[in-house]
Image (cartoon, rainbow, N blue to C red; front, side, top):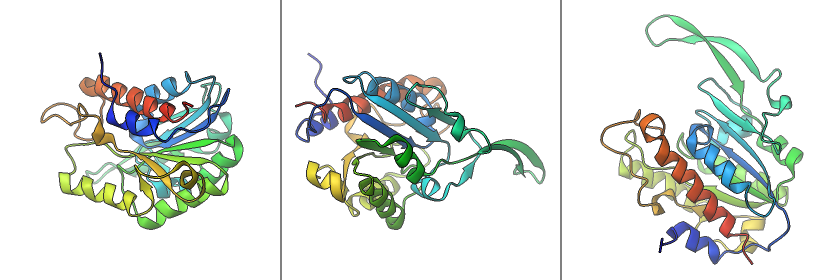
Length: 246
């Protein structure tokens, strides 16, 4: 018999009131724009008729969603119908010239990161899933993110960043410390997750999610590591959905 991931077991004790359908907003970075985010979105949609909207922008940090920072390395946008919303493509996607790192320039396609405030207003989620942290965290951006989510009467769930080769173990621990020091923890009660805190899904509870010494680009679970990223997305979604069990 397959043993449930620790993150899923933790969420079982955090059960949200069951309902026929819940609205879930997911915001994230390049992991969310890849196999992790696609599977996270797919599995979340299977839960009791949930409506799900997912926004993943490569290189995004919490601050990107607060200040609509432009990025140019890719994205995944899925509205309730699983299609990219026209509202967030229009003038938010444009061509720009950037440095090629070799003394020259190159043309790229930029996207202005969607505003978290606007996404919350548009989608009115009962639960907001934040899958950010791989591109940096500040206490201020964490607090502002939580304040926005709770001001919109949404329960907050935060999926912490995974292991990579580009960060040392101490650097990753520092990211998680920043989250826990700012009310993003495993022990948050449902009541607090609704009003001022956020429930943490620690990606390190998935034992298989350890970046190999070889393969990949050092940062992403893509290419030959795509299946690992997909499993991470599915298991993280299961952990979130476990919260909806009565």
